Image (spheres, rainbow, N blue to C red):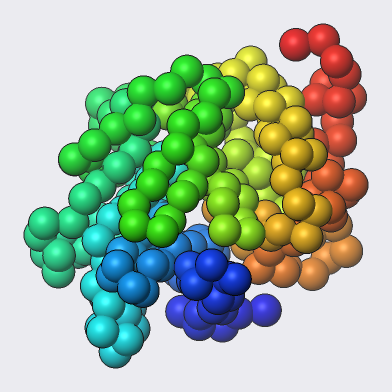
Length: 238
Ligand SMILES: [Fe+2]
């Protein structure tokens, strides 16, 4: 299990690096996809921006892109600090995640996206920069404009899925019907990915055996995640 701010680094066959860490009191999981040759560093939902910036600096790298699964405050925590450290950074999220903060008071954080995805729920678009290629799947329900990312050996689930369960849908802006169809789509999508790839949850919560692993394999998620195996999700009707 990763210590606070400790990084797991997976260097893929194509040279792309995947860095995973856990940061903060809410057990947020952060993933960065790095193309060292082209100096591209895309960080998903950075929590402790100073920590990210300092560690990357030692490697001669600097964050170039922030990719957001959704705009709940615990996921946008590092935004303003990162903007101070890297004023010209590109910031990408789904158009629907531009939520009026009045919707949820303290729930949502303000993020000014420089680019947005506009794909329909349960459809995927490619995001590519240098040698990095990620599929971005619009998966609303927990929050408006929620997306997941997959590629380079990982599926970063945000708050759609944790290791054992799925994200809550009782919050302002949540939509339980949308969540059900996002979970059905996730089950289909995960079934199509290599079973040894890692599912990185938005938060490190308890797994089925009482441990708190940083990630699980997609095989384990498909076989054991309670939400992915709920009858409402496994039934064929949409
Ligand atoms: Fe959330």
